[in-house]
Length: 259
Image (cartoon, rainbow, N blue to C red; front, side, top):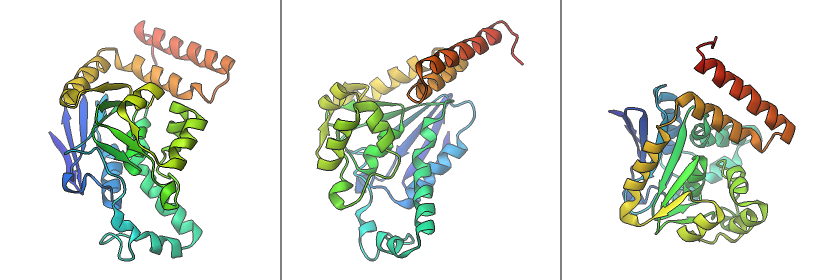
């Protein structure tokens, strides 16, 4: 079933799995504000029984990043250019960037496990969109790069927090400030990629992973994701308490004693 198909985003649903496809291969899935609004809408539209959301890019690249027309005085038709944004007041600029960030936030919800299937380039906004997902399965030709600093900007689409969490502060700083490419083999070695496979095996690998993610009871997966996501912000004793509370909920549920 097709749930949404507009502005370079196509969403299909098959049972408990939603596939979100960046569908503008002629532009290597360059991202626009319209695409971000469609991605944010996707998060609101997903049926409640979806357990896994797979994000992929159509064509040779996952996403080559922000549509460069945003940097021109004319901008992207119907959208404010960066120059126009700079002329606005601080509150308006903050609100606009916050709106753009919504496309990158819902992937972290505890009721879903999200998987980015990455081939070719994942640059800038493309890198940050892959980072928004819980897991990244990469083809051997995948290349990540954070080019914002090279353009005089900063990564502002929620990518800095997961990048530091995955690879540590020093390596994240080096990747962002140099703008260099991180190829698939390195991505797997430093923890950016969960799995790297030959290009022709990407779809099969994602399908296998999705099937495995659907095997455990959903409630146990949701509780486990919540525990792991919060572990970095909790102290050791706080995490122990969170584990006890989660396990008590699971035991009551399995015993048929849930409220």
